[in-house]
Length: 126
Figure 1 (cartoon, rainbow, N blue to C red):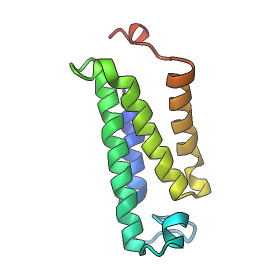
Figure 2 (figure 1 turned 60 degrees about the horizontal axis):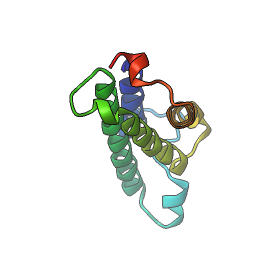
Figure 3 (figure 1 turned 90 degrees about the vertical axis):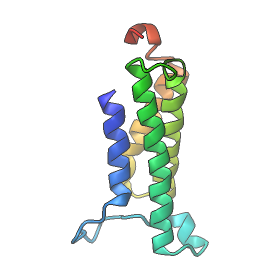
Figure 4 (figure 1 turned 30 degrees about the vertical axis):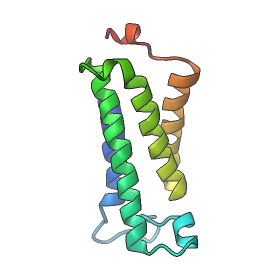
């Protein structure tokens, strides 16, 4: 549960927080796709934050389902998969090698749940 919440919050911080003196290599919220279609840097940042807030909200909903919150127990796996998908989508749209760890986490979450059917409610005790 804490891992899902931490992953969600780090995702938001990657795009919502701007360092006071960013390193020259800091990718920020610059999308290769949105730049190509003429979206301003401010618009690109807003889109990144919106996508990551959606991802975070859904991942946190999944985490709450894992701990047994009524109404979320039955759908926590789909919430985690959806949250990982939105996070992955954002990281791909704003691709930078710095995001490879987050991409791997999202792919791992989706594979574990969709392909390996792990963890199960029974293994989590819910």
